[in-house]
Image (cartoon, rainbow over all chains, first blue to last red; front, side, top):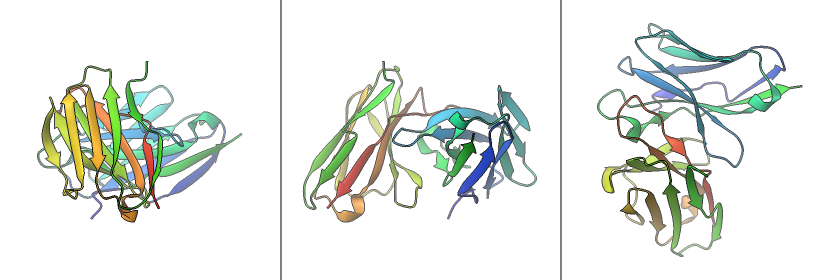
Length: 115
Length: 114
């Protein structure tokens, strides 16, 4: 039973355009979300996070939007660069008790940015 | 100056063997984890340790035994390896177990059981 879902396994965009990566969750009790980026043969690296008390968090070219009513969040990358090509994971601590020791991950979306 | 390092990066072994994966973090974190990424690409928590104490064991077979000799190390020993154990295993750490903190991952160990 996937609590955090990334329904698009892959996404391809042109360099300089916007990349939008989507993530849905099933339980409205989730209150914190993280995005991780993973290159081949490397571990995931933390990218950006958002608390449920916000609907937007921005860090340079990366912005995460949270729509609590739709139980949906998205990661926007503007402008996209070839170096952004990686797998992006959406993650969250469990909706009930627990924290970082029990992160729930989506399946990931592979982003390819074409020069 | 690698933050979370795990060895080996690749491990190929025969069914029935026993193997270990080592992990070390130099971030001064209290909490360390083992995650498994299976063939379907899901990243799932296996074990969590806080200050050398086991706090999470996510229904992992007894053949998997984590050991934390100190806060900076969390090793994973696997007995009687099976084909289904083939996966990428990631070690990670975080400052604490709070909800609003991120985990830092090692580069992964690709285990192939033949």
